[in-house]
Image 1 (cartoon, rainbow, N blue to C red):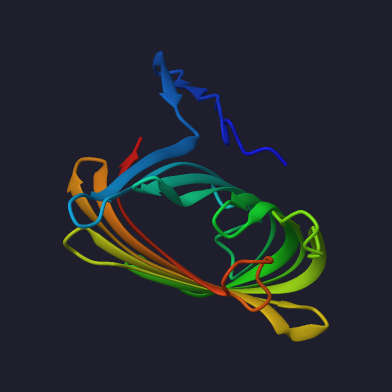
Image 2 (cartoon, rainbow, N blue to C red):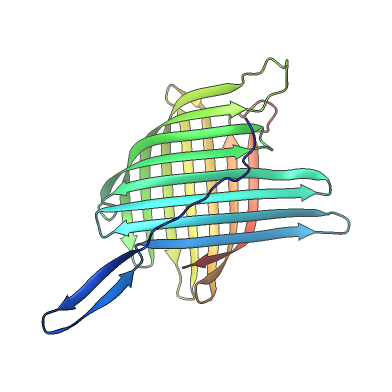
Length: 253
């Protein structure tokens, strides 16, 4: 499968509402139903060690009162250590939540990703599940989700190696997500995924993300993120454990 030349492009249409009353002059009032954001990070060094890692991302979130929430995210990473590529991956995900403010809410999700370093040409995931909001407060929330997902992977294998070129599995997907806001504009977020194969809990994927975000000025913020990934049955030639660190700027508009 060819590498992505352009991984994600999106165009969103803003809406407008007309407000007014019989006792006053009507005036047109534009509202944007989307919360949009972009992020950019650059990590590097020179001298005894020389490397550069670039990260770019895009988010779009739409909430229609208490009826539904639509969330789209895309991230691209690329990096070199001197002449060797040390990071080359991309991921896009979309999630639709029905009545997200309720204690229990069903959702549909879909992901697509690639990771050249992990020898993963394509990974696509789709599924349905439900979320339970255990804590929902102004300064923080905690939720637990359970879903059934279909997981397809296409591997980047050496010719004549005898390794499988693809894999299709049905998995459970359990997620623990918590967020806490602090008075100084800082926010801490934790997300853990546990995804075992339905009939083989020894074949699993664990993904843990911790991030801290602090407001710099206006809608601009600085974030530090750490991702830990463990795949008990990784793609042929890849290690079971992987970690990614990111320092990046995020702009909401």
